[in-house]
Length: 150
Image 1: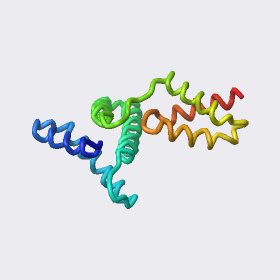
Image 2: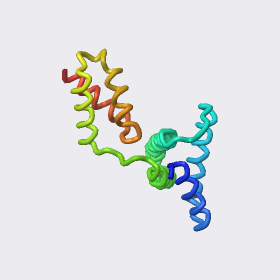
Image 3: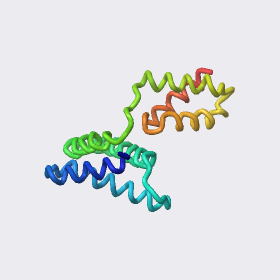
C-alpha cells in the first residue's frame, strides 16, 4: 500500500471513528498533496511526493509553534503539536543527531570537499540521502560547522 493509499484509508477510519482532529489533519495533508500533484503536473502521487509535502507541513507547523509559544498562545501550539504527530506517521523515521552527523561525515568522506565552494555538492548529496529523515536547517548547521573546522 502506498503512502497516499494509507492516508486515504486512515481518513476513512477517522471518519468512521468520528475522530475530528485526526480527520481534519489528514484532510489538510491530503489536500496539500493533491495541490502539489496538480501544480507539478504529475500523473500520479508517489511516496516521494507524500514525504516531501508532509515534511513541508511539519516544518511549517514547527515554525508556527515557535511563533504561537512566543505570543503566549499555547493552546494553538498544542493543537499543532498534535497535528505533527498525525502527519509524522507518513514520514520515514527521523534520524537522531548522532545518525545525522555520521551520515554527513560519510558524505564528506565520499565527496572529499576541498573548500566551502564544494558546499553545493555536499548539500545535494545530503538532500538525496536524508530527504524526509532530517530537518535540513539542522543538517545545514552541521555542514557549515564542518566546513568552518576545515
